[in-house]
Image 1 (cartoon, helix red, strand yellow):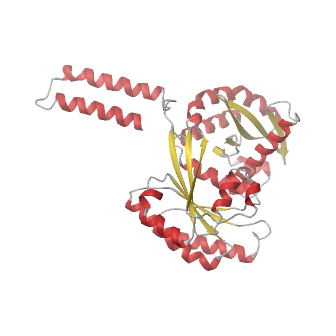
Image 2 (cartoon, helix red, strand yellow; image 1 turned 180 degrees about the horizontal axis):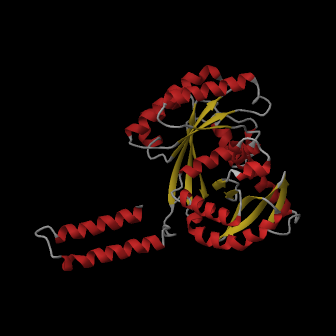
Image 3 (cartoon, one colour; image 1 turned 135 degrees about the vertical axis):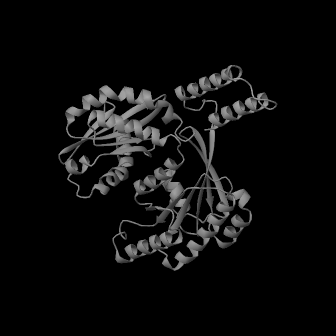
Length: 367
């Protein structure tokens, strides 16, 4: 978009000067339009941004104190040892990671009342130019739900004043496995979802329940947020869908090295061959387990238990092919749900074409 914007501004600036005093005959102005068209075609042939550019992203992690923000971040970063004896974040703690062709700055905003007031009063520092907001609500503390919604509304007002359409991912934290099926937890989750729905009826909220004891729930939520930042995601999904249909794949996931889901394809046929009754649950199940496939693959590869770059798993009447791929010099993974193991040959045959078509889009996933 930036390349197009610059090109269009340059073109109309020149035309404006030419036509300032009088209209020119078509033969005199036509070369300008032809040159403009040539440049547009060049962008169409090479849609990715030049590799000399490097995008910088700002992601906010906000919510009341003790709502699970820092634990979430540490879980994403796999620093499990730091979860023991975790202390509250005092003020804003900023860290950064290099991922997917960009520098991502992670702003962990401590949730104590005095700090919340500071973020709102100095919003031009803390909230301005935020590309994404993860908002945390502790489902184990229903007494603070109303307070949390009030703080959320204050943040949204500031973002609106900045004319920022910042995407929001809602994290219902501390939905631990031993409590997730209890009536109290289910009631709390329903109450929060109802509050969020009533709070903004125009927008469909993206809500994820997470637990630090189930890392894949956190990675799934983080993947959903990261995908919001990608201008290329729809194009990658389009290519993945075409590839999957050509090879008779019923479900496909493209994963980063860390197990983040970058793009997915889903066919209703996958419900039939996996014997899972609910079509909506099929994709959910694979998105939740994909990071675990990644972790298992890396562990077995380390000890030479997987000599090749792929592994086969049997599920009901279907087969899951998990494959390591190299995009430029970066390691990534793909997961395919197939009818039978024989379909693997067709995947191997067509996969290089898919990667060749999609490589630039993947390398500049969020930049």
